Image (cartoon, rainbow, N blue to C red; front, side, top):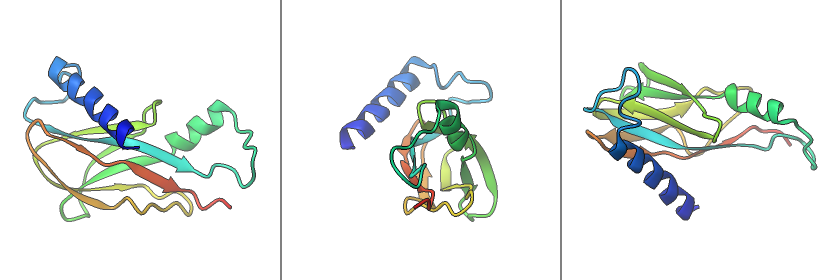
Length: 134
């Protein structure tokens, strides 16, 4: 897990250095980045789980990462989970709370999580979502 986290940070950092992330529409160089990997499960009550790729994609598409202002009330940004099961949210420097939109009986011990983001800084918040399916 630590190796994966390091790899994600390296990929994101390399992207920032090359400018491919910073030059996204509506993104400013004075921003920082909140990013991470998202795992959702279990997806089926019994194994083997015979969901199609489209069904699994729909499960991930239904979940969103919510970036709140430090007050945990004001939504600053809502981002989806990418096909590679990661997310990224560019924000101006400041204090934020990272959380998820809770679908059904979803829960996660990883969020809500308070973070501080500086200019050009990458803050990694990996999120494991338990669907409650048993």
